[in-house]
Length: 184
Image: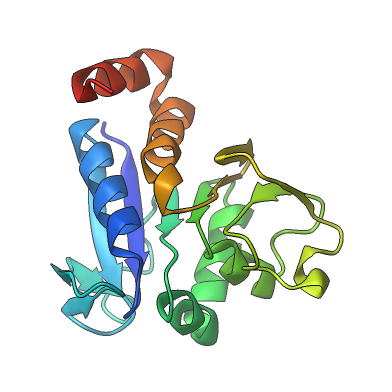
């Protein structure tokens, strides 16, 4: 059985983060579903157009994902934060003891959903307000794993973030195989 990942995109997502995560998870044989808020096509902050597999309105409410991943980018993060369905989806994911990944500015979505209290995270500098960071330990690490959350700091950390997801969900051996094939 393959691991299932949802990459949730809103208009203005960070192109590098979304494409890197989708690519590396597919290399690791994850079943990746690219889901939008409404559209069949979503345009990133840098103009990359991605065709989605579905949108939140059409998503099977019984669909279970091992991880839901939120790329950063603006105004993508603001668009995700403004949609109440996203907060409900993330809360249900956490309540079901499944993982959530947030990269760059996307931990802001988790903060607005009330999911960061007591957690250790990393995020893009300035992405969270002082109030959103209260009762949260913030580090400058490229990636932080504090189950059920996996957070990444920036577009430059996208590859490490995706590899951390692979390691956490599928194991060190597969992560090493994928990383080795990247020749970095």
